[in-house]
Image (cartoon, rainbow, N blue to C red; front, side):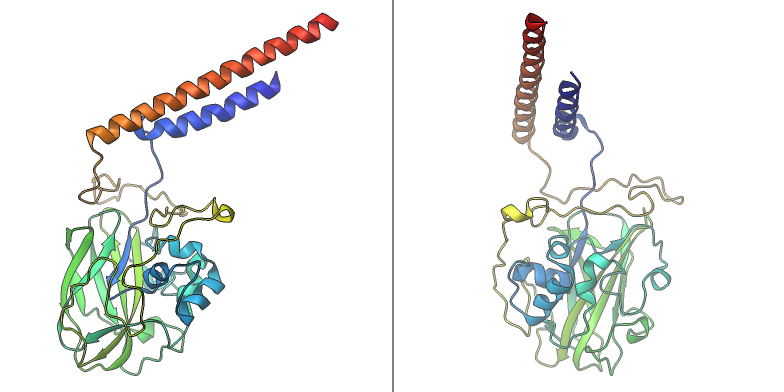
Length: 326
């Protein structure tokens, strides 16, 4: 009888997970975003295909930390930082935000694929977002004399951001930040982006390698996933499919946040705004999709209940067989 009880318990868990989206039960939130123009390191390696990256830097990053970090490209974050970025992120770990899972992003190399930009020119910075929140951005650039072959430190960055946007607009799945590339800088640099939420202590980070000069486009408008880079990369990124050995990983493009020491969705003392992720425009399920999901759930519950009934019947038959020999 105990075996039947355990089986039913597992079935109940499956049914509860299937019913959660329909019944409005709490589910883990999705992760949130990364800089796409100029392209961040984590998005670069994701677009190259973490299973078979093209550039030497991405190959080394995967070797250092594995492939999963790049499927979680929109999750370089600290859940309870509340603006204390320098206190929480050690020197040499700015690109990973101090998270060992993303340690490959901190590799000090001068061959990271880089976006070519024109110093002193206007540019629309595009932050690709998978969940919209209230908050603002600060973009920093490295000082003159920056050496990409050395670990990135807070002292490597200019002390003040060259672009601050406290209330950016969202369009087509992107925060669009209008600014100007700092003048008087040439060669290889790095742009460090901090997105600090105002409805939560959570913040997100990204590192974008750039080459500054007088030949880059002043305000390129790449298609989603595209950018002008110094290192050739496929114009249409390949979306890798999980293999049988990676069945425990989330599908590419649908990473999940890992829990922090504090609740990921706790109300900020200064705000009564709900912290549940606001879907990006165009992602709201249609009535037909909702009906289809409900039908699938009903079918799953029916099958599960049928299986439970079969188990109980089997248990009765087994008890009957034992009784005939007693």
